[in-house]
Image 1 (cartoon, rainbow, N blue to C red):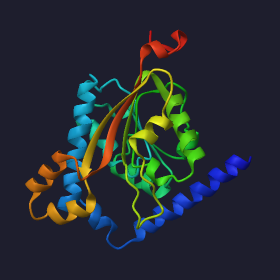
Image 2 (cartoon, one colour):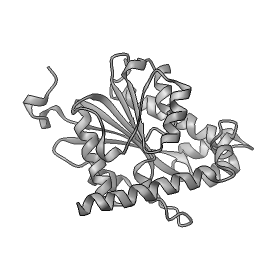
Image 3 (cartoon, helix red, strand yellow):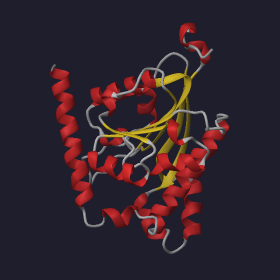
Image 4 (tube, helix red, strand yellow):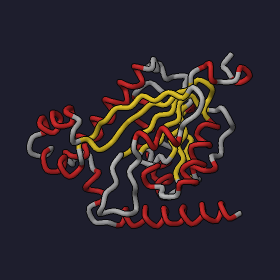
Length: 250
């Protein structure tokens, strides 16, 4: 009961923080694709996401069931339709009802739900791919983070993949978030036979906002050097040998 109360407090804090962010005057403009810095981030994320999926031999998505945990208004989940995924196999869940209403308006054919990631309303072993973008850095409560990880593992099919994208450094000017390092990701998702494939991407946003509008090519070059990158994208998998035989795909 005490743990649930702790979860409720953290979820209430998250909701208040998301509402605060959305009310900021520059929020929409900062993440608009007409903003070169935002466009550069999305191009980089998409390029590296596809490269990782290809590296792990996940290039045929039509039969894959995919879940986006913390989907927001569903922008990246909808991109999977262009990658070949089937609408009936795509599901997204977010804490904020306003975001889900927007997602339903933009593409009513997908399975959108309002809910918390620590209590996913899906059957066990339901999804081939579970992704979560910039979620764990927003959660400051460690037990809640771990509970969400447990739920992600629960709904993932044996042999499925977890796809994460998040920033690794804390922002001293924003105490409402906390960076999640590669070491912390490994600790959160640790277990027998778990494998991690990391890529450092995304040019530091303050630098990108300064450089990309003036020299998009230079922002791309700086990002490829990786020294000034602030995020990681990773695929997490579990070796078949580590999966109990009763749970393996037939």
